[in-house]
Image (cartoon, helix red, strand yellow):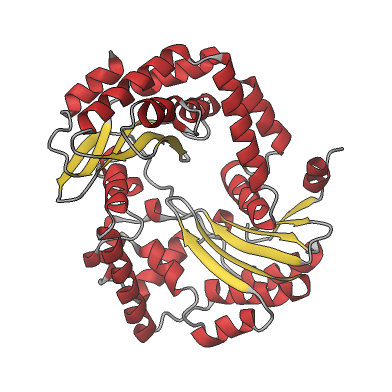
Length: 427
């Protein structure tokens, strides 16, 4: 049995009576414990008037509970040398901590406290909304961030899945404690929650502590988010900048789709490294951009394929021509050597992420929420190794046949019309 297989054999999974899942993995030789709660609710679960609420809740998590002030939350964790954090994405929100193994009960108590007993004090809420408005302003000053938000909004036009996670000033300023509590009661249900821990952990200790702190959350049926549907479209923002930032998108696939691995490998071969086709043609051969990459973002029920780069106003038309031609050529002619390299790169990235307790609990929580089980690394590697050249070419052809998304900012007067870009991919 390999070290990875031994590690995965040590994973234990239990479910509390209210439906919350608890997963632990003891890792020999590790003195710390990394643990946290993942909730299958993110920005795509928000109604229009709730835009940005998930992110605000993440910010408010550490701002005081019925038992602890904001100061005490930080002190209780940092007094034992620990750290605590939270993050919001399109489909998930997580609350995590890292402490010594001897302090897991304390960390679980703090995490349970902030998820079940937060007071959302009006003064703290006003202060944190202002912090988020400052964060929003900083993003507006970053062309790369602005174009990325516009890219998602146009790829999934008119849908929550495409809206920026931060929200908008008009929605951010409208939130009050009652709205937060209503959202959490609706979306933070035990069946949508996984508590995962790895490192120096004992399953029984973790299970008992989680049952005490989170076992009282009432079981409830949460509404399913609206089905995501790729639309395509464009947003062009002409600004006086030194460079044009450009993102071109095409329809991707869900991580549940049979062609998921082939689509991911196509993105890797096209623009996933220094040996990729786009890097070679755009950067090394023609010098049209400092960097360029292709990516595939899968979600539960849809996906987004994209290419991103920055270039000068003079080189922008040539960059688009090279990108579309290179992508078309890749879809028609990915070679076995490219497939082998992309496979290896994906496997290294996946296995490297599993070499830390944080990476292991993130994998465990997300897979339990998505699949109801933890998928062994060997099973995923087998899927990657089974992908054929023909499947990668077919995935590339399907991707390029979809309607494009274009988001661009800066000196972009010379950027080709959307219909011409679509025709170039399909040629």
